[in-house]
Amino acid sequence: MVAVAALRIGERSLPRYAHRFAPHTFTQPQLFACLVLKCFFRTDYRGIVAILHDAPLLRQTLGLSRVPHFTTLQKAAQRLLRFSRAATKANASRPAGTTMTRSRCPQDDFAIALARFAGGPVPS
Image (cartoon, rainbow, N blue to C red; front, top):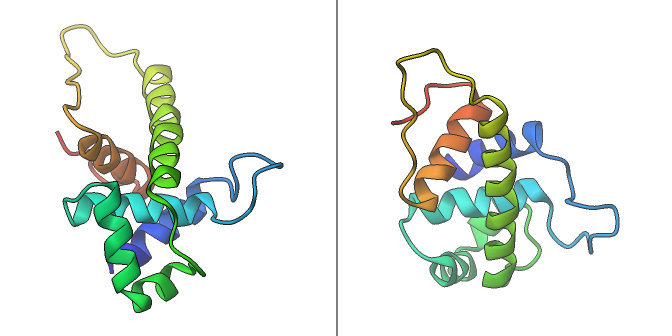
C-alpha cells in the first residue's frame, strides 16, 4: 500500500526522468517510491536494496525490472531533497511571529515531501 501510494504520488509530482540524457533505467517516481520505502522500513540504502532483492512482488509493484544500486538511491535522494528544499525556500515567507522548524534527518524530509506531494498535513 505504501509502495503504490508513493509511486502514484511520484508519478503525479515528478518528471519521468531527471534529464533528457539520463540512462532511462529507473524513473524518478520509482526511485522516489524506493526512498519512501527506505524510510518506511527504517533502513539504510543498502538495506532497502536487500529488501527489494528479496521481494519480487514489491519490485513488480514498482515496475522495477532490476534493483537499483544503493548509490543510485543516494544520488536520487540528494536530487529530490534539493528539489524539496528549493520549494521550501521559495515558500519561506511567513507571517511575523511564526517559526519554522528544521528537519533533523532525511527521513523527516521525505515524510514532509511526501505529505506536500499528497496535499495532506505536513508532519512537525
